[in-house]
Image 1: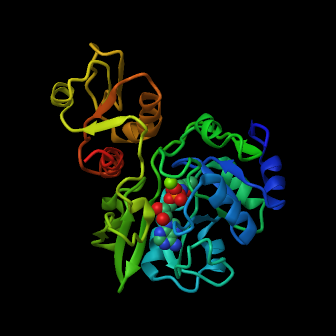
Image 2: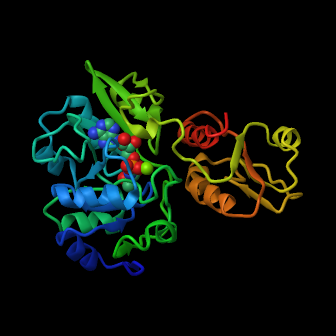
Length: 320
Ligand code: TXA
Ligand code: MG
């Protein structure tokens, strides 16, 4: 295929999607690789374009909680409370699906992940379609998620016809995934909505983001946001010493390291929202620079900081 067109036309995007083609879409979290969720062949082509194993299910994007009812068998009142308060927003709900959602979307699981994204272009796009959009993050499987149209073009530009360019993603980290087990809310992936906010709406939630061989959400796979470069997480100065790095790439939370050429600061003012917004883009640019290894430090373990640390730990998990 020739190089994808990058543009802002929801008309073009809608036309391609109605033909069963794939389009990269902007959301507030990260860019998605979207196709008609009700069409099995289209969904197969999503897995293929991404190089994603079929056991890793896709999130289905809808325009509203009302639209979501077309795809759900039932939902606990807590799910509705979360959707009504947080949608459109960075929250995915895992709920029992109707048969109209093909099994390949959920990798044969009984629950479908549904979310209503908060981006004006994608909301406009969804309102023009009479089907929901299955969309994983628009990166090659296992790599860092894309937060700009350009990130998508680099990895998938030759595999899809169109990238809907909605600018840099406002949240920058994937949606928080919540489901229920025996009536109890469970957080399966930390993301753009903090656990504190979920709990303020539905009470105590179990956080279960690490699972071994049978992940509920394969984003739980320990080695999932794997950069190509060696990646160390901990005390930056100590790591540089310990590994005798002469040309490290440095990703710090607030503190600049002016002695080094490749150093990026997530948020000089210590703002976790800004840090989340910068995280994947900075990981990418350090990973693609000429450094020997990337060293990073954790951020405060609260609010969005939990999701940021989760991604940093997974990035570091390739080197035990
Ligand atoms: O913010 C987001 O959620 C972005 C944007 C594009 O919406 N999407 C995203 O999709 O991060 P993806 O495919 O990269 O990650 C979705 C995660 C995967 O770990 C997948 O295993 C899990 O959600 N998931 C999806 N459907 C599921 C289901 N039915 N049961 C369990 N886990 C599910
Ligand atoms: Mg992903």
